[in-house]
Image: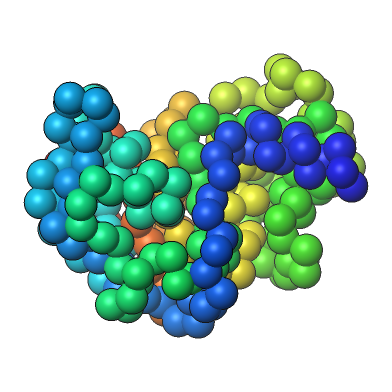
Amino acid sequence: DKALSRLFEINFCDYKIRMNGIKNIDSAPIIEAKNLSFNYGEKVIYKNLNLIFNSNELTVVKSESGKGKSTLMKLLLGLLSPNTGEILINGEEISEYDISSIGVLFQDIQLFNRSFIENVAYGNKNYSKEKLDVLIKELNLTHLIEKNGMEFLINSNNSNLSGGEKRRICLLRTLLKETNVYILDEPTSEIDYENSKRIIEYIYTLRKDKTIIVFTHDSLFDLYADNIVVL
């Protein structure tokens, strides 16, 4: 409904992804940052940056705080425009593609004051019940669902969830999306070691026939990454 759509717009991502393009990302693409330069005012973030994110691989992007990790993610999604250079998907400008088809997890996340199932189903109109069940298990949310059911209400400030549960539910919503590209920002933030390891192992299994880019400070990802980019 309109109210939920507005909540999604405000709380879920707080970003407006440009969706001018009409081409679908029909298979796992090669994504490229080519001769990319970007400034915030006088502060140079990137100068002639060149990166390739290959298909069928898990690429981990790491940096010190303030070194442009979040900026690169926004550039890859078309949320920011570079001063010079370009973002390419299979050799074509990102503006040619419908970027809304990408599965995105932002670092700052918020759930709606709605039921668990409404939260995870939003943006996933024709989701697979079988995939939902797998994700509940793999993200270790089984106990939460067995105790409360799919219809349990998440309150307005999400205080009836732990930080780790909240992030895992948001990650579930992202991974439930049928897509060939996942771009995830700090997917294991606020999550304990055992659950983080389990989540990372699962994300690693998804890389076949997909392009997965993870922005993270979590060194556990280093053990599973096909490529590691240090900014």
